[in-house]
Length: 488
Image (cartoon, helix red, strand yellow):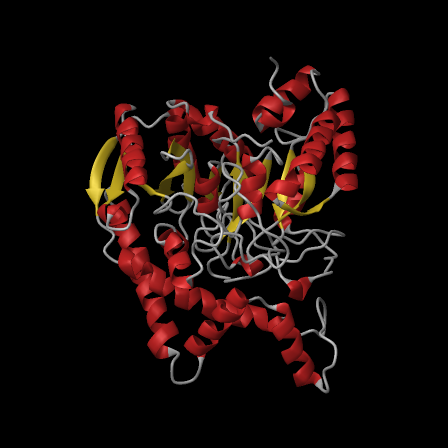
């Protein structure tokens, strides 16, 4: 029985394109048809760009027919998290306050993907302004996990992860501020990579926390992840925080294996609160990497317990500053009935922001207020430096760190209404964001009720090549990718 077009990876599809077995327009139509049939149940998309996708796919048809494809992404249908500006396509960031906003330009990563020939299928759902771990905080709809529609896909890039897992998109862009690529990657059983801070441009990314936001890919397998990362990475004159580091051919380096690598296992990441099934699966994955020739070493990251506290001061503080621009004056929502400018702004923000966003704005504003700045924000930044130094000390001894991605598998909708319970989902991911390190989540097993489990691999700054090659070695040595969710 032939494999459905939507079940193939990027590298498998583009090889078929080159052989002339199938055309990009056929694949785009297959995805658009599947989205039309199934996304009513999954809820991955906020907008589907049918015309833009079909036009891009037809252009790719012509390039392959002429023998001049643009590269390994030419004709690949991708999904874009609704935090990225897209020229002529509504960009809401999952918030009512940006309802109807249509950017006049593309984010750098979107432009780079389309320049590489990728076909944009549409914009995916997300927690409002990327503030959440379940995609339950979108102002527009609920997104469901393709492995179990009663469960969350993770967040904030839940729509992107659900699209890739449910074969509603071949790859997707997400952002990771406290774990928002890796955690939904683990929950949905797809590959999610957070690059080093500065490796990928943030130009055109609607800001949540400017020192923590990391754009990155979610894909079907590690080779696809390497291909997408190479297309979007690199310095950008529009983003002063992007770094002028050479961008390797990540896919060409995948086959180097792990023999001789020193892999660290942080003891703090296997403490109380970790689901026993996840611990067993992750420890089995670590042993598999030892079998492949790596050496293991126990390491310590003593400030791990402070990571969440630091994150939930720094991130809301930056959010309260960034979100002050939404005032109803320039673009987006403007609430009616204001008797003056201040009243109009108050009404607009009250109507436009959801509860979680308001909560974080208030937390951040308090942390930055006179008399409290040094006690909260200033102190949090000092502890952030200690978190970074912990990682530096560990990487003086080992090449990579191995850990669970999440403390639990995907939970049911409405199960974590307490904000603190929700925030604990980020316990293993916030450290990588605070330190700006590259980290990936790959599937390493399933729970007893059939839900994916993620292994997290964390690397030194700008060492994405080694992170990817280790993830690839593990992926190739196991058969976890053979299992797929079944959508009716």
